[in-house]
Image (cartoon, rainbow, N blue to C red; front, side):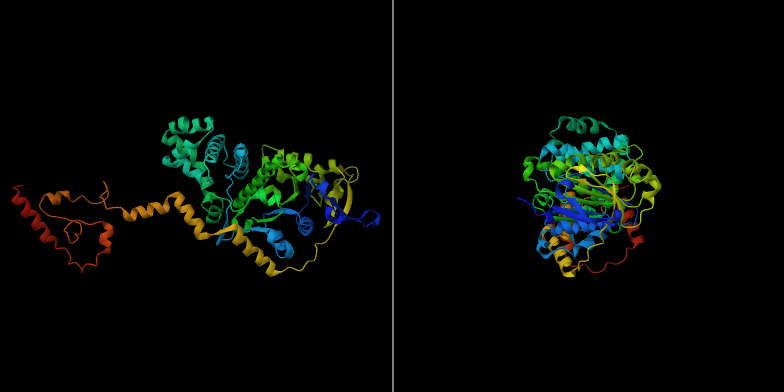
Length: 511
């Protein structure tokens, strides 16, 4: 099928060389080489992304937007065309009444287990870099690989696997990898209590901190995901992930966003079963992507093109892509991205970018760009152009509809979410909280050693202490005693009388 030019090109700027003022954009085929947008706050990055997203949605494309601020998605939500409302999935982790299920450990193909574990290790390494250690990674990796062999496992199982012996035995019985199984049977069980507690304490602290937030726990703790990322990609749906730092916290935002991107990577790789010419283009927009840029992100950039996952990245400065030990993400961006768009940047970034844009543009040009002005290297028919200057288009003026936004939210709740009470009930049953409470209500009262007072000495002296009795004269349970009518108020104990009774009993026994 031959595409119309209007739908195969997304427009985002006008050239300003010699006042040519020519409208231009980028073709669908060239977008498969990805796009990279960098610039300081307030220079116009988000407006450029907004214009491209609006066009993709209007053109019927499949789109995912991961937004750590929430403003971009809120700006889009009420501007979805009516004919595409049914395609939208609005993911709002801050919704306390309804929760989308997102189980990162749910993998339809077992051969991707190690990719899931590797992706999670990359996420944890980035988020908890200040406490990360080789031992922590070793234990966590084995925990994730163990849980992946038991269907229905979630991230909630990580902590329980470390401390609950009965649960651990059930998981170990299902492990298929002999190396992972050997770790849990021979190594972990051989650790002494003190060494084990020291080894797992950082994991309990960090993973537990993440999962202790009810909003997050109710999303990643559902055994069955309520959204299918592969289906979203193949059917061209619109997935809006509002992982706003201000609503759920910075660490939670980074973790959830990185989990979503990892899941998209895995879904893209599953497209290997689909002939390349039948793979539908899917566009992933990640604003402030340094928040989610793990080392595995570098793999996505290098392999996504053949799976028709087209990525558009935006952030503020290059230093955000460099860690104390690695420049892998930065190198992957500048080594694999076809179209590079630069708004005004700082001197350090200008020095690095000069090698990309000289001789047309030098450091002084890059640091003095006005707002909404760009220098770019555009992919044209598979070849990167020489650098040129342009002005981005102003944000499209589209009337926002509150009713459409509300309709999208309600439809996402209905079709892709579960009520809070259902999710919490499921998690409580899994964790044993509800079961233990019910068992306690049925349990007969039994004096515990070192707990209740031991009255056997007084019983031996002839003073009886009995449980409440039923009509047959037998002792009754604690539950039955609660069902009896209330007893009349008892008189206060006469201590002197009690002492005399004890003395009299002692004399009778010649003690």
